[in-house]
Length: 167
Image (cartoon, rainbow, N blue to C red):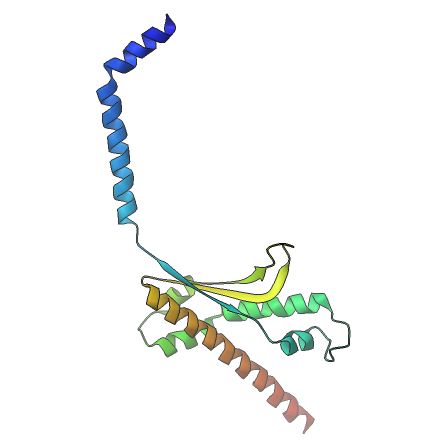
């Protein structure tokens, strides 16, 4: 008896149920269409083994490597890739009139994980979001090149300072 009572109540208000379902689907479609479209470009970089080996205390390939120092070097590289200085170089290189803050918001840098062992690798993933696919690629490449050039400048500066100290 209970089933037939419920069935008749649903049957009487079927148009109300269909109308509310249609309104819900319509609202969801409108919300989806109003969302902005973003494209994402990814650059994967691998620091040279010499950079990581020197930082980890194993200057010679046969020497043992201090893993904690290598992890610290990777953290330094990740922070440097997202730094204000690197993004400022990329903004200047792009010449788009984009603000530094806007570029920094759209850049994400992370260490790549080994998919099977779930351990960190020595690869750096740099992702950039933009409103067009072409612009996201240009921005990702500009940030990657700026990072590479910035690291070269910092390393060269350290070598010059060491030489001045020794002279």
